[in-house]
Image (cartoon, rainbow over all chains, first blue to last red; front, side):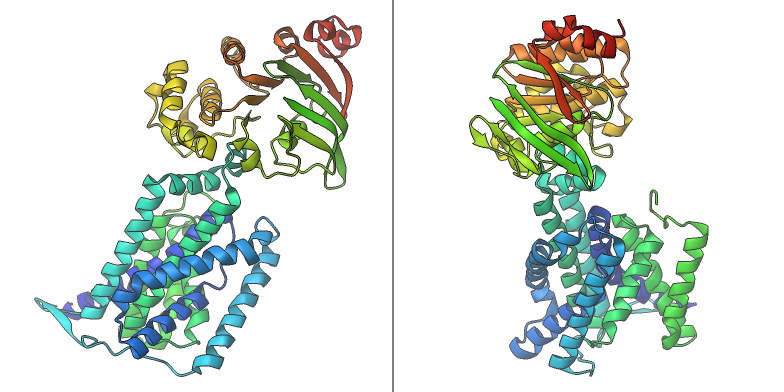
Length: 287
Length: 234
């Protein structure tokens, strides 16, 4: 029982980082109806960024979290302005090919630069844990989860209480209305994509402390983010976090009680169950 | 103030507007009447920068605006109360009003305009925190007008403002348009309610199949046999 609880807590903590990654996907889709098929690839770029900054400059991931997220915001903003903007509103298969193409370029670029080997970040506290009663919780996971929660909360407050955030919600709510009142939709879309990638930058940086960076993770993370967003409900911010936690726990339990390589089987089983019973996702409003 | 000169607009292969020209003088109420599908909404959206004309010129206060993106057109002082109201249903009434004041020209005067709008529509003041989608049709129309005024427009284009509203509310909406005009806002009015819109218009155009077929003062068109037969059923 104590062990199961331990596994669940670790799953929740990892799940919050997954949730932050999925939040980026959800925000981009919810506002622009564009699915970022290169999501996991960007996550892995952030993991490598954290790895390099640690190896070369000795900077710990929690210190570079915000700078990396800010850099990813800029990349996302520019990417939307240049490459993706012409594809907004076009047929889904055209967007799909564009972003899958981008994903392929990124993965192969990473393979070229870093090779296929996994790159761990060995923090001084990588193997420390907090003991609470019979629970032993990894320090890195606690920090990563707190970081993910803080970034997600900041994003939530931004959308709720700033005028730019409200304007982005207005675009998602009624695009014609946004043009009617003279909102600069292209600019707001670029900010949205930037915010989506900032989530990814933060999530990847945090992920680098609990998983080893490797190009092979990219595709798995894209699928994972997708699964989480569909389970939580497309376009729902809270749903992305809830979905992330659910997947984190299911992966942790499956990995512990069955086999780590079976993790994704359970995630997808969960996905299928949700799709059958509640196609709009747990917290999704409508399809 | 506004001059549309020979604009043609296509939606894909279908031609929506064919060499349409009209002028709107400062301080006027200009009515555009025509059947459904005649191109009235296309005309308004083209002026607003939401459609790009294939040919022709649009000038506002002497500046060419055809082809400018909608947020730049709005920022020149051309506001729009769109067909179907186009409010943001899941945003609160207060947030909807704020969205009207995102234009650089109106940001500084946000609070003053908000007070003015709420004084004009006290019902909105009672419902500031409520989601706009839960308002009645008439309240939504007031919100759409109020949101437009938050942008400090000099010219407002009203597209079917009385569509789907109860007769007493239609009266309120038309009175609001006249009041705004009396305050110095130039108005373009597209209305299915032809008789009423011709009555308050200083100038009017009839749009048929994407072409202007008749124009004159409101009174002239109201007396025109063709208009009476086609739109007033007399």
